[in-house]
Image (cartoon, rainbow, N blue to C red; front, side, top):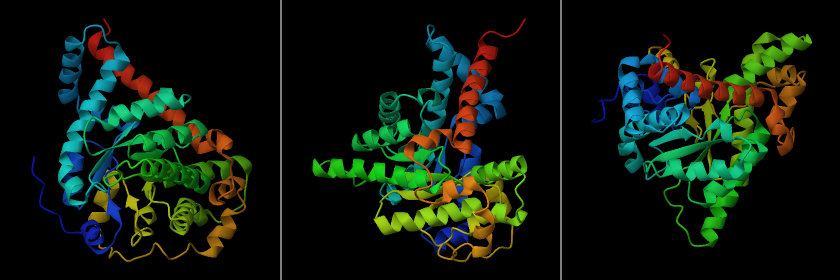
Length: 359
């Protein structure tokens, strides 16, 4: 499939004006094709996205899943479902190959997430990261920012995998992951191994941090200006970005899990990846907003003072707010891991219903 013509609008204007790049938070081929027309140069897949895409297009994926099962008569539901996820990822990666070549590996990446059921086993995560990275030259592999995940991230980076750190919501998680990637890159360099086309990124799921803090405020009865709660994720990203630059970390910050347009507009001008769901791209591109460079403009101190009333904001915002051992028990981490695990179970059930329909 050839690249679609570029579509004028705020997204393309931003892509042509700043170092900030657009990735699509979905591997749905129709959405990705349109995102590329907006200037998009990357995309992602995770258990929730894969399940949603397969459910959305049963006329496509139903026959394909049945064909996978027929070709592999001893496979269980999970193996069949993950083969479908791999096929989806390979096809999406193909659409991004022109950008991969143009940017010499820095962009044009398709993110594939490791099996969340391996979240307690660093070796399985790293081994699967290597396996996934070999599916296409432009794959970047997602591993969660937990203590076990950080170990796997360094190991897989050393083994030549471009990483996308996920299940990450805070400055301490992002910085620790960025340092792990840096250690892996330096180990490769020390042994004379090539890193020239590696393109690691470290995600902060801004909207999920905002969601969590809103739930904490309601749960604990914290009095706060509610408008401040739209700025927590933005503040965390800007602080992490500054620390990455100060420390010379080579991974880029990636922003995902949108809840409002600030989570796109506030990062323009930074050397970051912004990865909105396609519905947000359409909202932005159909608007009359004129992109301006705002990454270096700090969040208003009033909002920071308001957010400081929430203990979990301090944990997320201060670089020493959490230890590595605390990452997995942080509210949004536990909530998101459970969601990804549930999506795996949903995909198993979908495959089961196709192969053994209810009488």
